[in-house]
Image 1 (cartoon, rainbow, N blue to C red):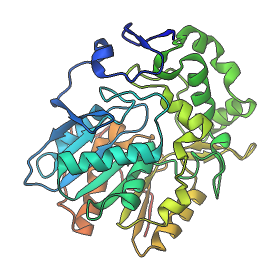
Image 2 (spheres, rainbow, N blue to C red; image 1 turned 90 degrees about the vertical axis):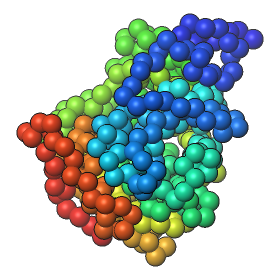
Image 3 (cartoon, rainbow, N blue to C red; image 1 turned 30 degrees about the vertical axis):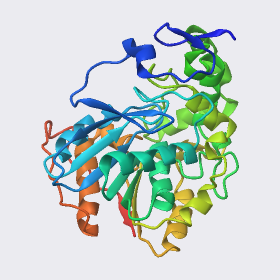
Length: 359
């Protein structure tokens, strides 16, 4: 079997799992100490801040991110909460597992993490695909593990190739990018043709994309990035979204019908292109409304806060608003205290009120 050239230049058999020691030169030190826990199939990397005397929060990053994207909010929350943030499999220092990326597999990693590391009921907070995983935990975790879930701009339904409502992944901006990463980079960067990607990406994007992005920009949305992912991300994740295997045996509509705890969803920038009907953004208003109906049908609350001018990662670009928003909801639900974040730059980092609240 031909060797795979990893990001760090180490040779391993194609398809072998990678541990962080196989590509350690792509990592740097961060504000909080990192730890590894053995979950059986994988080693999961995580950071933790705050005292065990505070309520527990678990932060789940989006697919091209790492636990340390939460460092600013961990700092703000650690006075009142104990905050855990993880690298999912295929992210950062956690084990990279080619061909083993699905909601059920990754969700069960998190069930084990909560059981072995946190060891008490927790509120889960996830960005993007991490938000879908937070919803998965709200539906399928062990009894009494989860108190509530915060879904930060999750691509509910819009990440599916054949969703029950609204635009599919084929009608969004992410799928062409995932296909390009799969083609030019390969799982575990096994192809790694970065220059080929840069030369070929414009040809990989569908014909509607350029015009829709221009119209979205004219409407006030910031430019969508179409570049390379970070080297601490396994492009095998992109392959799972591109071919739909991320959802294998996990229908999102059925999942939401099984939710057992209150949900907060923050809905960020989105734009439905009037020419193509395609979606720029993570999730449409129609899809959020359908998710709300499904969860409320279980007898649990589903609060929607709309931030249409905010970037996809609120916790990364506006930690003050993120911390204020989630702790207001936590306090309302009796899960923990409100936190007033320290504002470093009052003009750029002031709290932004949601445009509207539903439920």
